[in-house]
Picture (cartoon, rainbow, N blue to C red):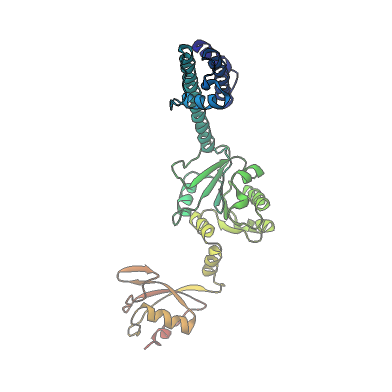
Length: 343
């Protein structure tokens, strides 16, 4: 009987795949052992009754063996041994199939072929070795927001497998299939980093179709192409391609590039200036200076430079000795004598 079971398993195993083989083996062992037990056990033995045998079969095949039901004949003991071997074979097949399934699932995720299950995440569409890794690090430097990294088919595996925050999707970045597998429809932010501006435009169209109005950051070689992107979505934030840090800042804090652009433009609503504090300026500490300039000129001091070096957003009680340089934002430059008004 054992030889028959082994030969049958090999024969059927060559034709059945997946979870069907262990299912077939356990059903076959159950039916044949039940029939054999009914034939070899004495008449009236409770073990062969339908309401009892399924329980005996489960605990015996699982090699638990509670002992509440057991065969009394020698032939019944042989049938019980057959059930144990059949259970071990079935469990071995099940664990093998489970290991194969897990390995296959890990392989599919590593190769970017699986559909993700993400919500309120960041999607990065495009991969450039080195550059993209730095962007990913900056994107989750403050928190562990999930990130879906999408690359073309020429990237065979997840380039950052050691990063638990980043999931990987591979395929045609302008295709609806990639949009679906990367869960773009449920994304918080999408970063489009195409290989050229035409590709970036095509990907942006796909993103807008998958999730209309999502905050989209597009990296452009030629910022003159931003008008084309704004035909797709007027809210797309266009950033110079060679400024990856600014791309990630815009992804994390929507609208920050507009602030930077305004600050760096001479015609903006607020410009950046610097000035050295003259002798006798009268400010006891940074807080006094900040309040005076804010109330009097609508200015905001961003940083100060003292003998100790540059301090961004200094503490309120930071002393300001003579010769300290202030870096501030205002609509117009403050005259040097305006810094003496605090006396």
